[in-house]
Length: 368
Ligand SMILES: *Cc1c(COP(=O)(O)O)cnc(C)c1O
Image (cartoon, rainbow, N blue to C red):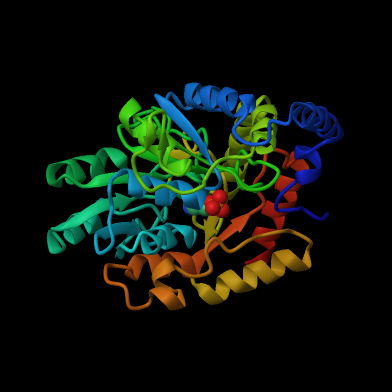
């Protein structure tokens, strides 16, 4: 039995397609193509859901990171510490601001930023201006441990929440509801996705929200241009899709959790390693990572699953510091490199059936 990694057929079923076409017709009839009423509606409902004070829609998740750094006044030449396991956008946003990235190593069981490594890095580079922890796979980065380290030195935190819509911190509060800026991507494969590119940022106060609103629209404020911004507005069509898909999103995140629980149950005594069980109820389960003993075994497992028609994916094939443009950047990376070498992600979406879970588990076990 073939098991797909994603399931867009089910996610974008005929009912959703029909509803979206209705909305597109409505938008075309109103000639409201950029930042329309669905933008405001979705921003409010997403902020309410995340329990954040403000949510601002943007053009994509990479812009959200860059704008987050700009909102904290990160300038060319500044140093920004970043978690070494992430999608490439997390290093790109630093470079695009003209700033210098410094890698922070990760927890070997989760790929999340390691507070001890961060502590060493901020002591070694006392002029670090900002840190980007990543809620990778939907697991919460240990904000409660890194917040005091950063607060003591006046270091800003931009949380990369591109994979963590609806996940919770270890204290049970929603990711994105902290005192920091938190960025989101609505790329179609994320837990909540548009029909193209979109992103957002949640902000703790009106001052930051107003600044971000201004940056996304060429530095405009009600009384003229006060700073140099950019164009990172979100299309009304994308906001309309997000508002519509949001209606079934909380339930889909619950379904992801059910899938994760079943995988856990069936795999916890197997030869693959899983993230600690304490994350079961709080991760947004964007991805379900398993760890093999080494790189060779990881590729062999991927090949075995592929032969059986089971989708799997390398998030990430390499740690960011191993990517060619990053090899000379400073920081700590040893555990991140090992983590990336061993990690493989197995099918995770809200629609993985019990039979599919059984099949995936059977083939993982058959491999050994
Ligand atoms: C997807 C992703 C981004 C970038 O989002 P885009 O919308 O593709 O620009 C940034 N960080 C992480 C961790 C991501 O997974």
